[in-house]
Structure formats: structure tokens, C-alpha cells
Image (cartoon, rainbow, N blue to C red; front, side, top):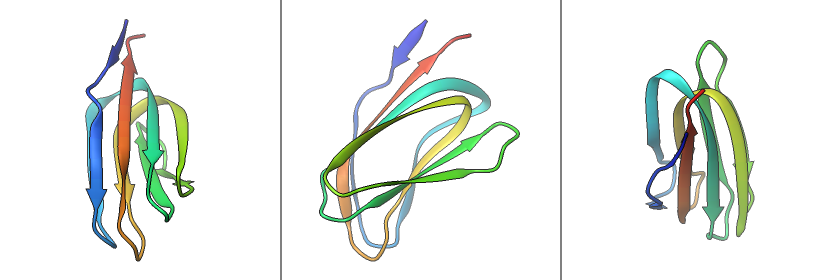
Length: 93
């Protein structure tokens, strides 16, 4: 079964990180980030038993990432503020 969590709107100041989803046990999920700002933003994904991975979402684009054993989803800004939306859809095994 798939669960689409509510859309979250973000507006982050420069050099800020914020967590948008946590699951201690790890779960399969799709993460969609819409970056509406004029600067890139970093999507940080932590998976169960794996090193964190970082994906840069370019300015004014959308990216969808499929993740197995997802534990934490976070966004990090650089030297400029960023804004947009993030969706997380989780899936049962």
C-alpha cells in the first residue's frame, strides 16, 4: 500500500538544514522536491545501514528519487535562501 504524505512547503534561510521525514525502521519511498528558487538546494537522504547520500536539486526544477530503507529526508541550503515543496510517498513491502 502506498501513502502520500501531505505536501510540505519549505522556505529556508541561507545555510540551514531541515528534516522533513523520519522513520527509524526504514521504509521504501519516493521523494519529490520542487525547487522554485533561483539557487540549487541539497536533498540529503539517509538509508538504513548505508551512508547518507546528497543530491543537488538545480534551481527551478523538480526531481523524484526512489529510495529503499529510507530513514531521514532533509534539505540543506547554501549561501542563499531557497523555497519550494517536498512530497514523500511511502510504500509497504
